[in-house]
Length: 432
Image (cartoon, rainbow, N blue to C red; front, top):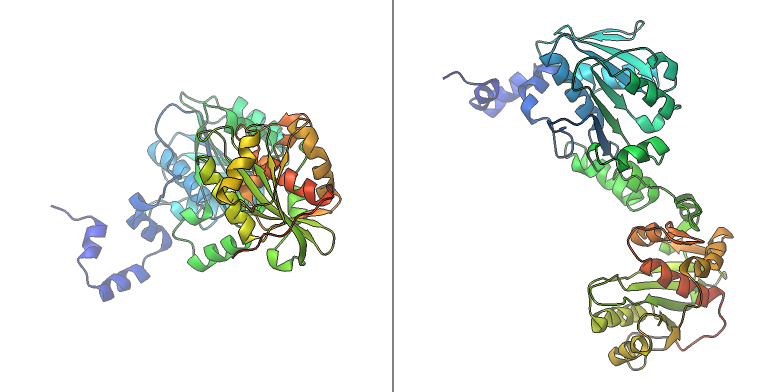
């Protein structure tokens, strides 16, 4: 039985393995382990999908996935015409074609690719051709015809919709035409429509999913950006958008963010509580906020919990109050009435609780608190992804999601309103 190159290499001792590997070209090395190049979220499935979308963080391997996909198509059929569309012609050539994970880099050892940069044409060893186009020049795609297309970093295209429309109109060579989009997400309308379309074949993942990246780089990026809008978009590959008429925006939250160590001392701390209607329903919103010596209100912690019976979430409220040496617990009683206050006191009879009842809808109630953040009178002392998602779903007309109820957002609104729009204070809770 004839051994594969990988099996032959495995028979050598370590010194000879290193000797062989150091003398292989990059295409030869890639060809040696070509069947092991992918990780989860990179390999497009077989099937009759027409539009494929790989949303991923930076360094996830989107370009590698696109290059391998296009190369495999060209390798199998020498008659193909493939469109390569990027943010600019230069990026197509320098990233998609000549880049470290582009078409030339993933070619097998016995495959010679020829790139005619001045003509914008790439010729594969099989005879298939790929053509270079720019999202900055939609008219360049007008009239062109292709079997397949690979679109990279669609979120960077200057004219995404026009270029996309002209591309799709030219996908008319042969049966089973497919377009693969590989991009870091941004909330542009075209990308949001592709994500929302159930017919789109979707893959992707986070920067940290690529275990070939330097561990110290991944750790450094996580430490600096994890949980922020930039990190969730650029590292986690999330499509994060603002709702029309939202009372909080992602940009506004980032502007009003600082680290806890940079906060002043607090003259007063309040725990806001939005209890669930039932143990199996929504989460219990539990948010700690403090009034700084500078007169600014700070969001300090999101201790919200889900799936607990009343005694369970009440214990979490008491735990948060003790941890932050809170002066007061403000609990909404619209859902549970007197039960909310009594269950909290059953856990800690000395807990200073103020029961509050909402007279207006969630949006109207949140508007004055939103205005405090807009004026810089309230800030976020840390990163609170779940809370921030809910805040960005709050509009003057109500709540747009995620989820059914803005429990965390409601809890924060009650706490900030008490600190900056209320008047009374209570004795401070201290851990014994």
